[in-house]
Length: 244
Ligand code: PAN
Ligand code: ZN
Image 1: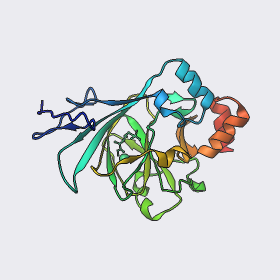
Image 2 (image 1 turned 180 degrees about the horizontal axis):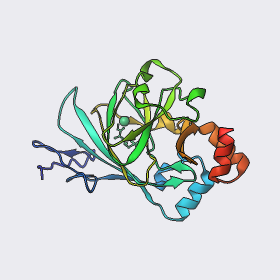
Image 3 (image 1 turned 30 degrees about the vertical axis):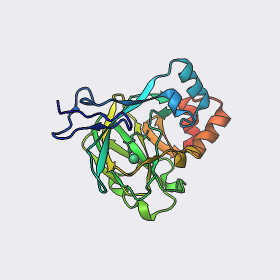
Image 4 (image 1 turned 90 degrees about the vertical axis):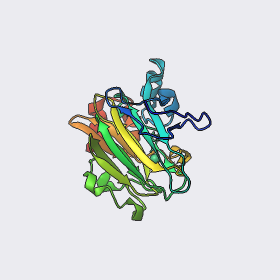
């Protein structure tokens, strides 16, 4: 095991020398302390509020954990997070991270999917989903270039071995659409910072839902409208309305 220097002030796992080690089987960063996010920490993220309340009553389950690592550095330093999202749903909506913008908006990030299947919702600052992204998934190679688009939101499916680059100014939320934990590594500037308020008020414009034929990324506004008219979260009814 590499030498560990755990700085309690920022929760980051540090090593002075030697490589950090990911335990692929356990999906952990050896020696690091995970920051856990349970359902109660994701208030306001899932659109089906009745299903969210029922899930909370059923137990405040673990949704995801992040273990972060860094080396000491000055300007230009990088750090990383190993994320593990559990499989599960609230209503139709798959388990996901809170999502954020980087406080330093120019800070980009590289994500590498390690195991499981999921994806990432990408959204420019204004957060409006364009109609053509309403109900479909998008090929990973289409996901770059968000920096010069002001009104885009996209869902990019990711499976093990796929890498995606997020340009600065891209809000991002990771989603597990599979039945196993979805494990990924994100590498970003140490000075990036995490701005959760930027996306908390309006939430992400796309919701990633379990559809009859697999995951679909759909307009959150439409999902909310379907929930309020159908009064329940039955998959067939709700998605039927969404896709009409
Ligand atoms: C990741 C995220 C990780 C957890 O390391 O922090 O996926 O998501 P939330 O931070 O939204 O809870 C990253 O993007 N870092 O910048
Ligand atoms: Zn990030």
